[in-house]
Length: 222
Ligand code: ZN
Picture 1: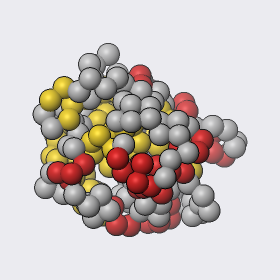
Picture 2: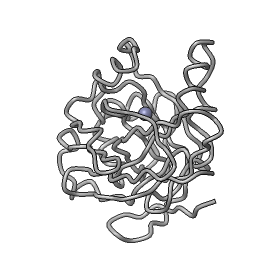
Picture 3: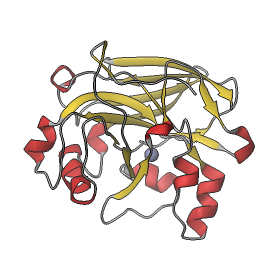
Picture 4: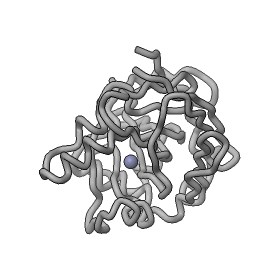
């Protein structure tokens, strides 16, 4: 297993690793590319802490399990407990902003979706959430105007802006906290813009959050 710990503004954080709450279909163009209807309320799922790995190390994909897709997402590190919170409490609890890959075993997910079954096997496996170091929120500035880009082997595949989110970040955190208490060290993934696609062993990835974060990684086989 790769080592992972939360890093904020270049310093190792004392926050423990926790659950990762993710939102599906939070960009209309991505919902369309997978032929999904737009949800009337946020689609939520959870990855366990065992899904976390550092994106600065190689990404291990379970290549025996069908197509593994990249989904590049803005991630939030939670620094204070949130239960039934309002938007200002949500803003005050964001300890860091980063980038994560919501790795998705697309063939398995399609089979589970067809059968109406939960998605955990497709999205919550070990290593399914490679994540960057975080930048503290005041340095990032406007969370709803950040560019998310993913280059695969030098080619731009994802190029979206957080202004296009269907559920904006603060109402989304408030909504999540009605169901799941967010604890210090938990993370929230805010959905992927369009352009997702399969990963293959040897692929070289570059992920960018505006001009704030740029990380490089390479895909290898588990
Ligand atoms: Zn996703």
